[in-house]
Amino acid sequence: MTSRELTGLLSLRESDPTLSFTRKASDWAWRLTFGAIGWPWLLKSLHGGSKEDKRALMTALGLAPDSLPHLGSWKADTGFLRHIVMHIARLRPAVTVELGAGASTLVAAKAMALHGGGTLISFDQHTGFVEATRKWLDENGLTVDIRHAPLEANIEGWPGRWYSVDRLPDRIDLIIIDGPPWSVHPLVRGAADSLFRRLTPGGVILLDDAARPGERLVARRWRKRWLDIDFALLQDGTKGTLVGVKRAAGVPPAPSADAGRPFRHVLRAAGVAALIAIGWIGRGALGEFPEPAQANSRFIDEAAASHRTSLLRQAMVSQVESTNLDSGEIARSTGIHLPALPKGWRVRDVQLYPADGTSAVALSLDTPRRESVTLLAGRAETPAEAIPLVTRRQGENIAYWENGDQAFALTGTINARRALELAAMLAGNAPAR
Image (tube, rainbow, N blue to C red; front, side, top):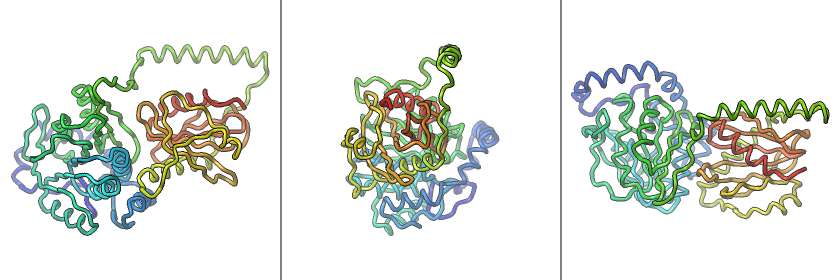
């Protein structure tokens, strides 16, 4: 749950204090157990993101920089809020339903106003909080159908108490899940799947705090119960976000990250053995190999900044994106030779950036798995071989490699293994230098 005001470590008290004494003994056991094992995630959640990221998000939405004075604790962090803006900008949802009101309500309402309008229906269990949030939205010129929904419902198959929601539309394009707090029950947010049948094809589910142990168990059950929805855990921000996308009828599921796992260690061992053998043969016949690429810290920082900038551009109506990629013109003008994109990759934006006294090119790309990544291409300090390395900046993994005098960095809210996989695809398509 979120609010404009500073919050403490504990969630708000129940509207009806008698409800806190009606929980089952098993619920208390779950809370105590997950409180004991989940404290690192709870401690990490006290940081809601950097002031710079929050200021950039507010600027992109046309809101005052102090619109969100504090994030963290029970509030959504900037990573989750950024996902809300990105998906609203892409989906232009006609109907969005939010569970747990506050800062996410303000951000979602403003993003929807900028991207096609639509209806935002928000539920929260605290009457006073609903009224305060409604007034806050009015002060910012935003209208939201925000409703009081006490935690009185029981959803079959899920523990804890759920929102007493009513008058829901038959079709929902975006579901934002930011409540109830885990103190009700560590698995309580699993009951949100009572709305999943209303999700339109292509519709999106966003679950906050998805890196916590309870939410990971919820996600595992959702994957088994909802085979027509592709779920992916994104480890950006401070708490992690689970993104679910409902497939249209007849569309095959996205490839699983676990596919082929039983044989992966065998293939890896064979690959390592082959590389060692080739290395000894090559070293004897051809001399020493070139040194591996050493990640240029400044270039890595520029890659992270270009990725954040590209995400903000997507959310800004006034910033027109250019999807026309002319690799030949770029090479003639800048001397930067971009790799050929693998089949199924889509260009969202192409921009020229100043970089360390020269120029760099940033490509905003979508992979076939709907991953949003940014490729920054520029000049390398020294020639090196095209072996991707991975590093991390502000919650995002960055794969870095060089090809001759060209340097490349691929940035996105993806895990390190996936970043290396995508970088390897691009490095394999890089033009010879």
